[in-house]
Image (spheres, helix red, strand yellow):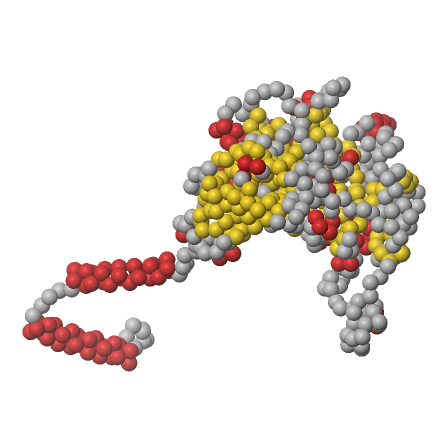
Length: 600
């Protein structure tokens, strides 16, 4: 190797070291054991790029593929969600990140686009959805005008935007989208270390999509601090709730099998206890687990681009009582916080990390906070022509009311009757009574649907009194679609997007939420529509073909048939029979005589 080559490599190494030291990339893994042998794992990745570098397309930590899409579509702020499953608030408590990183079932997307008018904004919105569809291998290109809404008060910009009238907010959902590993792979490619180092090495499609609930989010927003230059921040989050016992099954034996009889722990004090009858005995110990058992692998060190100048930067945080025994790999620095339940670990840069919690008696548990609001949304009624929607809001607090915004989008073939909106309330006394809607609904934003052009948009600013349950109901009518508009699985039903609830002026449950508002999303719904008999087109085709064949055959027969008298027909028939007999005799003679062969 020449001197110039060695000098170039030395400069390159020094530049890489300085760049890594001055980087602005952070990643963290938050682990929180939940009741019923569940584990919440929250992965967070955040990086900042200066606004000038972003405008000049000097991408380093910001993924180039996504940055060029945002610039081409003039998108100033982007929020994308991939979610499957249902969050069990009764057993697991409040949602991670206060629900700000969670989306509705399927795919949810909303963005602020810089445009001079609504038509231009929608054209750029279509460009954005189609580009993101190819980037994330999702069906975002199916977000057309019928699945696009323009919320009024439900969403606010999370970034710092200059005062301008050119920003347009557009929101779209795909509740029927199936999230799978095809969406996880592009998600990992947006990370600086791309799943090769750091906490992203724990990602495994088999584990992630085997979870009871999981959500992937991508947030891009501009930030302009009072002192310093403006930056463009991208934050990627993956939250999942794993079943510990299910995740600990080895990869070579993925099928759950019953526990052998000699390993069953039975309550022998029961009178019906016998050799073939077992009542499970409640254990006072917590089952052990480790990262390598739950995720199938160890954490591969720290991403080299992580900012190492912050001494308080911890890669992994665990929320268990401080008296619980926890073992980690050698060289790990453990820091316990003052709340008595949270401990964080600072990892070595290039060594694998594993965290082990052995089986031990449970002396104390982490208290689960009570949700601010409980919400449930279902379709009621019977028949194929009409139905109704029922939304139940429960306020568990005994002292304070809950103010929130209720936002839902309905497909155009579901036609609500807003004049049928009714409200009932159940108070502390347990008595249910009907009240005027104006006592609960403070403001209403309603945009009616247009057939095959746009859906219905409904936003309600509401308030639920303390220790009360409020039920809203309204009727709707089901439209009849054209037979070409039905999907192949029409009898399954049509997906209705989840409702979005934004809590107003509520205390934040976590400092890690970065003062984000509290969001709650209901589950998606299935709407059965009047379904025609799809065998009828086949019957019509068969009947039409038969009629055409009969008519064409009759007319063609009349046109080509020659009408002659009986005597002429007999003569023609005799001549034809004679000619056939003579032709057959000639053929037999030629065959026997060997005509066509040359004999010398």
